[in-house]
Image 1 (cartoon, rainbow, N blue to C red):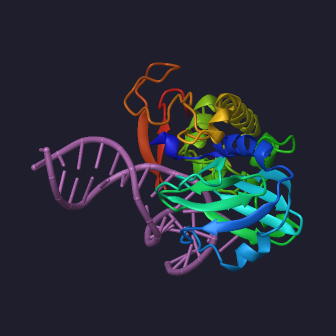
Image 2 (image 1 turned 60 degrees about the vertical axis):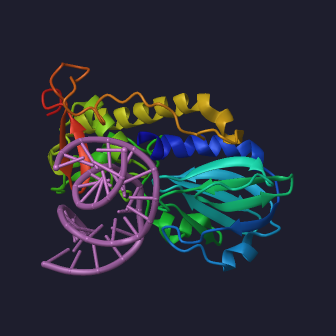
Length: 275
DNA sequence: CCGGACGCCTGTCGGC
DNA sequence: TGCCGACAGGCGTCCG
């Protein structure tokens, strides 16, 4: 199950995996076998991208940005999306919904069984697109720190876990890494965000950065899977300390890890280490 | 503005 | 063994 969830590190790994194969390539055409993703992929998108050269690839939150000469493709992998670079003649398998056919005989192929992913066309500047405009800072950017979380959390009664998963506050923190970062920082996920002092937010910001960085570093070992036909592109075993470990001993103190729902999401935490 | 609930979708898993 | 309901999740949207 976990392998099906692209969080920020998986998106970053996907970016690094496909980037060498797409940089400076020209998109001959878009071939869609299924347009019903999170939002319908508009047919007008096909003509918008055809013939354009890929000038850059970037990530913003969990969005992959393929910058072309006249605009950008915004791609979200949703909960089950994955990308591979294959010979364009490779027969598509189940759930292989979209191909970007390149000018070197290959294609970028999107597989997404649950179809929670999405694909959008954006006129420049891509940062002004409605999906990106209101996003908070990148967690791995130098501009993100504990003071940012502290300042925005004053007066907020929502749980700190919901707070750090709010993309307006901080971009790209999903359910898994929210639990992991809070455990490393020793903060109880249910604690109201407005009732946490600055030093603890500094610990939390550092934990967010370190857990994401470690996961990205681990993802580097799987980069070659992006060009393997039967590979499992970009996904890798995570070193998780609490997520999915309900009832198992906390790796810090041995107390049983607890699972509760916050909002509609499963949360995992150690009731002894996290206050 | 804020916080919480909802719904999209399908593979997997537990229970009977 | 087979079936079927519950569950998982990102995130835009809606509602109070």
